[in-house]
Every structure is written in C-alpha cells, then in structure tokens.
Image: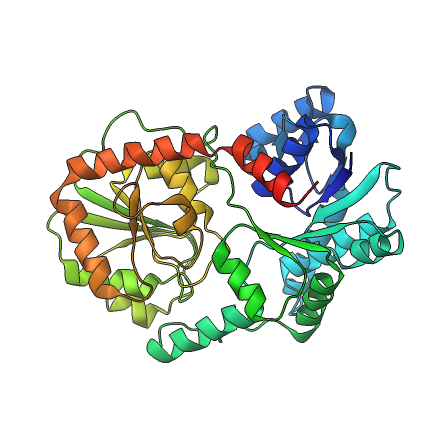
Length: 401
C-alpha cells in the first residue's frame, strides 16, 4: 500500500483531517506542518497548557494524529511570521502567507523523508514536488482556492459594478507567485479540489493534470447542533471576509430592500469595503471585524439564517460550520453550496449577483421561522451523513491511494 506524506504550513482543518484519515487507514507516512501538538504525551500537555493562554492554539491540538507521524516545524512557521512582521515594520511588501508557504516548502524539501513516503499530498509544494519528481513519486496538489485568473476576473467585474466600494486596488497575484503556482500544477500528477466550481476554474485555466473534486467532510464534532430555536429578533449572520469577492455589497443592498421589521444583520469578519460605501447602509447592520474561532459556534446557533453570497470560493467552510450548528444557509453555486445544500431543503441556493432573489429568500425566511428551524434540523442531519469518515473514504478512492 502507498504511504502518503502530507504537508501544510499551518495545520489547517482540512490538512489535519486528511492526515488523520490516512493515519487511521495505516497510510500516513508523515504530516509536516508548523506549530502543532499530537498524541497524548507531554507534548500534548504543553500544547494544552499554551492553549489556555492563547485560545487560537486549540486548532493546533491534533489529538487524532499519532505523535510519531508528526513533524511540527514550529521554528519555520514562527520564523516566517516574524519575518513578515519585520518586513511590514520597515515597509517591505512581504505577505505573511507567502513568507510562510515558501519557508515551509523549502524546509520540507530539505528534510530527511521517511523511507515509506510513496506519495505527497500538500499545498506549498514547488520544491517538495521537484524532489518527489526525481524519485518518480505520485504528487497530489491540494488546491483550496480558485485559479488566480478567475479571482482577478471577478474582482475586476465587481470593481466596475460597485465603483468606490473598496479602498484598495483590484486583487492581483504577484508575477512570482503566479509562476510558482503554475509550476506546482505542472508538476502535480493529480489535483485535489473540494468543489466543481474550483475544478471548472482550473480547467478554464488550462490545467492538464487529472482533477478530483471531493467535498470536505462536515466538522460535526467541532460544531454541535443547537439545542433550541433562536429567540428574539430575526437574526441573519454573514461570516468571513466582507468584500467584493464574497458578495457583501449584494447582501447589504438586499437587506436594505427587504426592510424586514425587527431584524438584525451581523457581519463577522474583516471588511475591505470603503467607509464611504458602508455609510450608505449605516444603521442597517453591525460589523464584528474579529471574533475568535471558538466563539463562532454560539454565533451560528443564535442566528436564524446564515447568508454566504459568494461570487467565487474554493469551497466556503462557513456553509458546513453553520449547517453543523443546525442553521440553514442561503448561498450561491459559486463554491461548495451545491455539494452541501438541496435548494429549499437545508437552505437555499440563488444565482450570484441576484439581489431580487436574495430579497425574496430573506423575506420568506423571516415570515416563517418555524420552517426555517426545520430546515436547520435538516441541515444538521445532512451534515451527519457526510462527516470526514465518509469524505475521507471518498477522497482516498478518488485519488486511487
């Protein structure tokens, strides 16, 4: 059987889930990441103690992963983050994630690999893929986001539709990063994505490696079903970056037009929309730029409906998190929505940029909160049918590992 080396710079939930699935199947060679604590020994105890002071570290406690399979390159991650802060202090254009991904890839490529490493599943992969290619190993690239051409096209179109809505420039990847990603895709023997929308984005860009689309598993253990229906005012929640790509202007416009009495709209996440633009909707919403991840479950549970009007997402974990909490989701087909939601059953899927459709669904949701609560229960039931156990089995089969 092929053993798989999994690599990700900061132990995101998807990479951890994939590594855990492989470990349970006896197929994990190693998991290379940054700051992380696995197993149940003294290292796990240190991690738990640190997490009491820094709650963000709770995401780095990998209880389901064998300690002997974990290579936690903490120094690489912390060094890259320090370099980013230093560069920012002196005005150098060094993006934090870019520094981290390049540093991690360089370290993994230079690290002694286990003898049983027969395939690689990873992000930040250029140097490690080059090394793997010399050994003729399968190289699986996990692509969590859309191709940059798709992203840049959406940003440009939205900047035209909503002039003055954002203070910053249209999103454009630097040339070196475009070339790096193109080289990674060219070296990959197979590409793994989570949605058909992402697959079509890569195919449109001319990616020739076989592309496998497998929806992520629902995080049912992290986000529990709410115990009771929401009370008080009708509440709508939008979680994630609030910008043009995520469709926030369409939500704000739809919310204003819907004019639902005794209703609240909460936006959770950093905004890249200009103050001048947001002032048009002053008094109709509340913005929470930063909410700790461990507090999100309560936010989902208190909301009647989560709205995720994205124009382009690799998947959109918000959809699954809300559904696990028993909260229905109103979204578009531009991400993972079609893989998670049957329209009108666990939530709604509306065309992108369709303000009228958003208004109709918002009003319908507010007018029948009992039905909405029932849709939330259906959402949780669907989540329980596609956990990482089912998703992992499907992924391993699709990747022929």
